[in-house]
Image 1 (tube, rainbow, N blue to C red):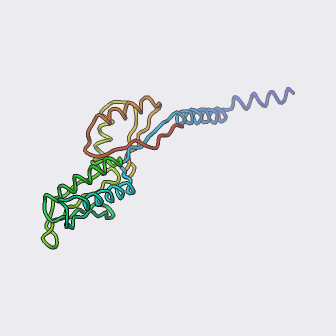
Image 2: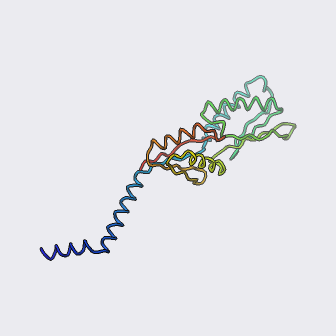
Image 3: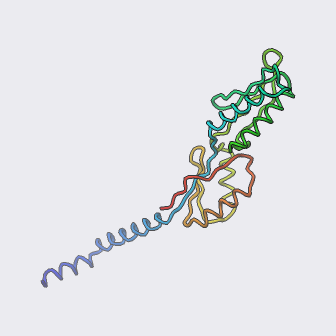
Length: 198
């Protein structure tokens, strides 16, 4: 029994063991710190299915309206944009008004669309393209990160592709950041998703 006690005593006072013990304590502390991290993502996404529904409703109304009788006015959904076409500016504008009403009713944010200028198309008609925003553009992402840093709230913000991830030690702090972001107009549609609590 005595020999065992001496072995334990010598082992405990060994400098090498002290180093190992210190490393283990630091590792546990780091794990505890990581376990306290919470995060959320700032994204910009739209539901294409709802855009399709809004277009279908728009075209149904256009075909029923007297001021569009005999018109070839149309809205088409391409991969990354909407294409509106009509015989003149009035019809193009009126059709777009209908479309935007349908989009809003289906929960699709109008900020997700960037309209170009109406341009001449085939058969003396006009065509207008509206780019659909999917993901936060890099310049806007940098603007968002800078804004978060300038708030001095104790969180970290990092750009990950077309998403901005915000990490903090408690959920109340993250909610504070979300509140500040909502009060700021960045000129784009943003959503706060993927809440994580470790």
